Amino acid sequence: MKFNTLLDRLNARWQTRSARASLLAFLAGMLAMWGLPPAPNPLWAVVGAAIWLRLLENTSPKRGAWLGFLFGLGHFLQGLDWLWTSLHLYGKIPSPAAMLIIVLLAAVLALYPAVFGALLSTLTARPLFILAAAPALWVVTEWLRAHLFSGFFWNPLGQTWDAAPILLQLADLGGVYLLSALTMFLAALLAWLSRSQSWEKPGRVGLVLLLGIGTCAAGYGYGTWRWHTLADAEGSLESARGLRVALVQGNIAQDLKWVPERQKEWLGRYLDLTAGLEQQVDLVVWPETAAAFFLQASPRELDRIVDISRGIDAPILTGAPMYERLDDRLVRFFNSMVIIGSEEIGDFDYRYDKHHLVPFGEYIPFRALVPDSVHKLTHGSKDFTPGPGPELLRWEMGDIGPLICYEVIFPDEVRTLAAQGARWLVNLTNDGWFGESAKPQHLAMARMRAVENRLPMIRVANSGISAVIDPLGRELGRIPSNQQGALVVTLAAGPGGSVWSGYGHLWPAFWAGVCLLFWVAGRIGRGRGLKEPR
Image (cartoon, rainbow, N blue to C red):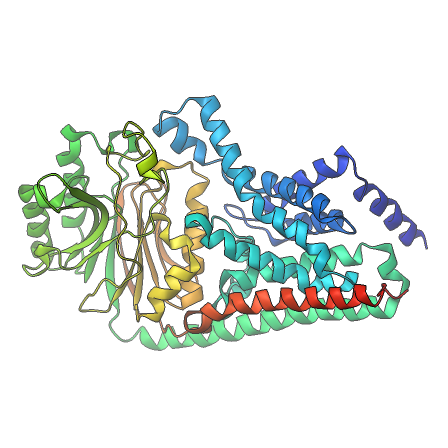
């Protein structure tokens, strides 16, 4: 009885329509963000989301949207602090304007939790429905965030399980979305148990606890089985010759990277690190725009790369800006990945052009309506042109799934590469644009893509963190942040063929169908005057 009284008092405070509830929603969003990389902890993510779900109980759609917006605002403000570096330090945007841009971006992203908050009450005619309705609705809003208006899928809620390698293996079934659903399910479970009315029937509480424990046990059991199955398979492949790949991290300061007078010096750094490799390799990988000049217009520099490639008897895969001249006045520019080595490769037949460009960073949206004086944040006054889409980079030792910079954060695009038959995923990036907190976050999302598709991830960054990740999400080696160096790792091609890579395109319909089911149940229930049984 005393426990129920305490819950009643807490419930009354949490559901009050005051500034206190609004502040609590904002803080709950920040708490949930603390559960995500760079220091993932599922406890904080679950508790933060649970507090928010309690605030949403018995609210109107309008009130739910407001509390959802505040939750999202706190959540995304906390998670986008790294943008300050790119906007203010390198973009030269004044401090007040940079702060305003970050707040506006967080506010736009907060619209997705606002939609969640507005719709949740329509799916929970019975409070117990929240256990399935909240995870499904959250996944739908996350999927929309990954796709609408170019998408910005930074730090989905499921990334919190980066701290739990066994449960992380669930990603090969339903992607990071399934892990987000698990997080929200546990939050909904905690929120339901915090209701004093829930404890009036101990038998129902026992069943709910059993459901929660059973779900976690099933997830842990599956993860353990997959871990040992794949680890044993990889162990049997170790006796066979794997791919020997060299990662080269130049660690060139971002404010010096594009200085014309020093570009030969920076190229020389990569060439020296490559020439200094102490063992034979099959592939050398440099980061995004490691060649900070147009290769087509730089024959001498290109010859230097080719000479080193021939000297070590291995091709060099590098990021570089490229251009195509359509006529005397029209030129298109690309952020590309190319393989340089043999004579046939020297014509850039082995080339991939980044297709998912960063708005304002690599191009200005609605360019026809914006003055030419407004330039993108990255180097150069001209916008990049997007490539044709997710497509493999063909290579004789196994087709590569190419990913430049933040293309790696989009689950469905990487899944497309896996479905096309990629044997290796390669992510070239330059995280030097961002603050230190962004580097482990970006790395964690790359790890998630490797597990989802059961393919190895070769990730090389200009200033770190560069790493090779196996299909279980284990790091086989890394070059830490803000260090220059080279690392050689041997890895086998991943098994691929995960449920996610083969059938991931069906999952959005499943989650939307669950939402529709509960919406229909709510409509029928209200029509019959349905009330929660006491």
